[in-house]
Length: 369
Image (cartoon, rainbow, N blue to C red):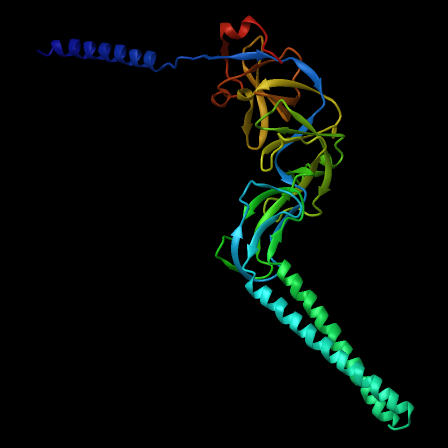
């Protein structure tokens, strides 16, 4: 019994040694090389263009309102209607204005009768004065009465003109050719003088409103050419010209409003459409690479791409600057050289210095630049 114990201990020790050796073998990590899709960089010379979204607006847009208060009895236009100069847009109830005209006419008639009476008395008193039958003071009184009556007649005539104008103001007319962009009153509604009834935008001059960051306002100001493209028709370009730059930045967005006049505007350039405004020539020509947007890596406010070392197949980040866009490609400038190979997918999952394996499709041919 005592002789079997050493053999048992020896067997137990052997089993423990084999188990520990197996554990050490299984704990050894397996190195995994991640496959990646890459593209060869091809540089080209471009003229950088800064682009910003904008909205088509009319240069002249006016709020239309009646010059007198009253009840609207009709409105002949709706939003989107084209109108011409002098066209009647809405009418007020004219009864009060007509009564005011009649009252003013009666005042004119009464004042005219008083003038005739004072004139007749002045002539009669003049003849009596010539015959020395009246004193000069009596004649002066009649002359003063005649002048006062004439002044009241002029006042009544002016009141009649005002009443007639008030009657004309019961019709709201267009101040120019344009399109109705808003309606703020309906028939049956009582409005006050100056209350907006409709808004009209003139179509003789259209422009685009864009908001430019304060860091780019100097470059936009010095742009040599301005191009306007509609998002709905990106192949159709218009020539633009900066008409106005806001003197101060917006308090909330910290951007400057720039109004760009569209020189060759046509019917396709409808009000309210979204545009892309490009300011070209603000910076000199530069060498850039057109890369897929999926190759761009942004970390801690820095823009970079991942290059693959051709010998070690390890990842190295290269800091770049985005200078523009061309379709689904991003134009970048920086430390990239002709022939560099960059990773075009999954860049956010890779670490600097990590080894990768190039997929066969990536090594077949260089990507387009």
